[in-house]
Length: 458
Figure 1: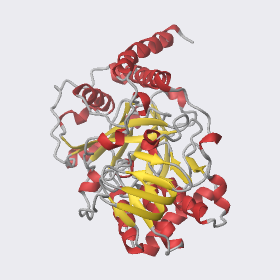
Figure 2: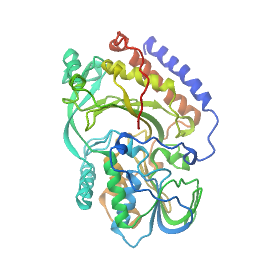
Figure 3: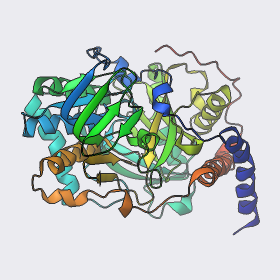
Figure 4: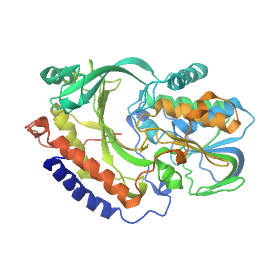
């Protein structure tokens, strides 16, 4: 390894050590219960408001309890009630339905699992999502064949480039990247999918509760869930909590919680829209594993940008975005798109995802009557719906060839534990940031504009 790379890794570790020290004390409480209210995303602000559901303030006895009101939990509850209407199913959400990763992503959806080749199972999962929309009469703005470009900052990392150099810079309005591969992708409106799932569950008779975080789980022949105001006893439990799963004591050794920040600008002017190249390339994925950036256009011609914040020690799920982190995000954005320096930001939010070492969801039965689906590696729109369906099939004992896709925690590679995990992954993120700052485009004087204060109106 070259000396400069060793120096970069050492510098990244030095930066990560204070972050580790700040997070040294293990979190013994369930952090979900004390997390601040989540800022609504652009997607939830551009649909009619969802119905409000009560807090759990009583004791319930049910057949199945589902924890987590995102894509997975809503799909699992829906299919349980659709396939066996006599079941009593309750769904508990810590805040508002869809307020987790399900409404905080870019809306990309495809018929494959991230990190894996296309397969008949993935095609069936994609078809299931389409069938759900047709059956329930839901329109979540699914669009297929969207021009997509995968961007590389180093030409040698892209063996078969379709665009390079000045041509690429003109096409996407950015001098940052050296090469790109062209493909197509599909996308949808995450907020409209959440709204459709909530509506479908209401029609099927699922009992829905918001602001009801689970703070303790008692295992036994039946499961008892404790919330701040009530209690649920269930014969079966579905954990559809993705990046919050470890806080409940499950899959700690195989799931990694990653934090992201998304910003969305005001609508671009015609000149800005032309310069952005978003008409030609509306969906952009930066090549990488755990550290990537995503850009897309919105229906009203805004610039949507997602970047990685990092990892919290002991799988902490709360992240108060500081001015330092806003400045890091601004610097990385302007390294890529310097012409955005004076464009105001109108939406900003924080999101939590979960990753696995083998790029496959942690799913299936983890105890006699406890089931889990989590860890979609940042590409969960199709898999969340599919695995919610598969958990329902598994609980009901229905035969299905795709049940072979379920892989419980014991089948996944273990990740480093505790403080070592935080040092390794936060150090890696700082190293990648340092590498990004060393590209020729990043080191050039890309803009002379002074920092613009965030003007966030949500």
